[in-house]
Length: 109
Length: 113
Image (cartoon, rainbow over all chains, first blue to last red):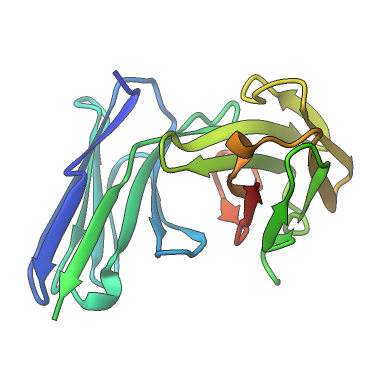
C-alpha cells in the first residue's frame, strides 16, 4: 500500500463543473503539497498546507491532520485546468516529499 | 529569479554511454533534490543535499548513479554506464527548508536507446 494515496486516478469534467481530488496518507507529516503538472511540462507547487484551508483563485485546498486527509477543489473548472495533480507529503526534518500517484484531470469545453 | 535551471532539456544517448544532468538551484535555497519520474513508478526521490552535503541517497538505484554538489549553485547527476531502463524525466528541485519555497526545474527528459 502506498504511503500517499490519491483518488480518483482519472477524472473528466465539463467546463464549469466543480472538481474534487482526494488524498490520504499514512505517514506522519509536517505539511502536504499539492502539485500541478501539465502534459510534457514541469511541476508547479500550488499549495503547501499544514492545517485548515488555503484558497488561490479558483483553487481551494483543505487538510484534516487528525484524519490524514486532504482535498483539492477546483471551482468553475476550465480546459486549461487539464493537468495531472499530485499530492505529496512533506517531512519538515528532511524536506523530502513522498508523492501520491497523481490524478489526471481533463476538462472539456 | 529564473527559478531552478536544468540542462539539458532533452538527452538521447546510446546504452553504455555516460550521461550528466545539471541543475542550478534558486539562489539562497539550501536544500536540493533530484527526482525521477517514470510512467510505472511516478515520482521518486533519488538523493537530496542540504548545504551542499548529501543527506540521503537511499533512492539512488545503484552504483551507476552518482550525484555531486560542489557548491551552492550547482549540482550534477551522473549515470555511467546508462541503460534503457534509466529512460525517464529527471527533475531537480530546491527549497529554503521546512518545505518553503519548494520549486521544481523543468526537468530533463532522458532517453537511452
